[in-house]
Image (cartoon, helix red, strand yellow):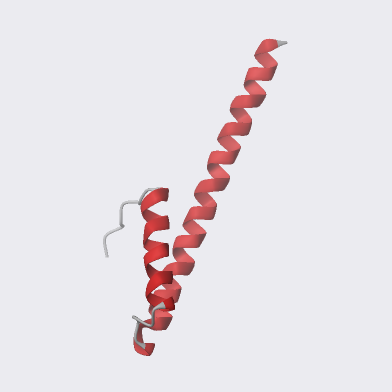
Length: 70
């Protein structure tokens, strides 16, 4: 199976919102519910990882800026 291109944070959140909406509106059959929940978990994990990476980058930039200002 070829590796998929990572999707943007915004696209991941949109997909997650779509899954939640379908679950809340009973648009997912019980046969596909577990599959959709697994996808949602993977999306959440990806988004958390991305947020942590961005947070680290921002903190590094701010630290570098403080050091340069001294």
